[in-house]
Amino acid sequence: MTRVLQAARLHLVHPVVILGIPWLVVAISFAINLAVFHLTPAGEEEGFSGGVLALYVTVLVVFVQAVTQLLPFAMGVSISRRTFFLGTALVAAVQALLYGIVISALVAIENATDGWGTGLNYWAPGIFEADGAVAQVFYSGVPMLAFMCVGIGMGVVHQRWGQAGTWGLIIGSLVVFGGLAILITWLEAWGDVADWFTDQSAVTLAVGLPVAVALAAALAAFPGIRRVVP
Image 1 (spheres, rainbow, N blue to C red):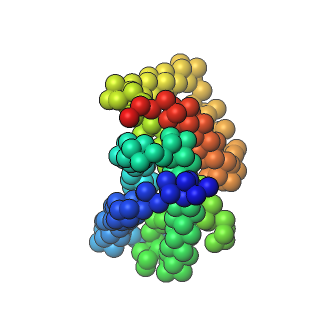
Image 2 (cartoon, rainbow, N blue to C red):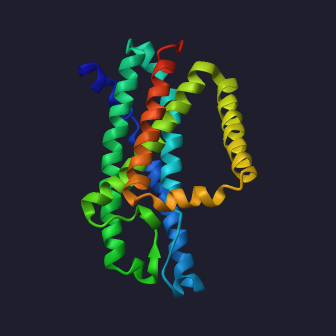
C-alpha cells in the first residue's frame, strides 16, 4: 500500500498541471457562457450549456499525459507498472470524488442564484442535474471518473504501441462508431435508439453507464500497462 501511495504522490508533484489546468479551461468556458447569456437574447429564457464538457475533456487529456510522462519516470525509480496503475487509479477516484463535491456546490449556487442571474444551467446540464447535493456528487463525479479511466487507457495504448497505437485507436474508434451509425441508419432504428435512452432513468444514464465505461477502460488498460517497456 505504501508503494501505491508513493505512485499516487507522483501525480501531485506539479499540482498546477493535474488540478490547475482543467479548472482554468472550464473557468474560461464558464465566463464565455455567462457573457453570452448576459449579453445576448440567449439569457431571455432558461437554457443549458454543454460548456462544462470542457472540464471533462481536459481532465481526460491530463490523465493521458500523466501516464505518458510519469510512467517512464516511475519505472526508472523502481515503481512497478502494476503499482503505478493502482496509484493512478487511486488519484483518479479521489479526484473524481472531489470534483463531484465542488461541482455539486457550484450547482447549488447556480440554482440559488437562478442560473447566475440569467437562467444559465451550466454545471449540471440536462439529465446530469440531480435532486439533492449528495446525489449530485455522483451525477457529476462518476462521469468524471469515466473520462479519467479513458484517459488512462489512451495513455497506456500510447506507451505500449507508440503513435501507431494511438492512431490505430482513433481510427478504429471512428470505424466502429461510424459502422454502428451506418448500421442503425440502414435499419432505420434511430427512433428505437432514442426510445431506449428515453426509457432509461437518470441514474442509469448519469451513473450506471459511466461506471460501465470506467470499468471497461480500466480492465482493458491493466493488461496493456503490464507489457509497457521502458
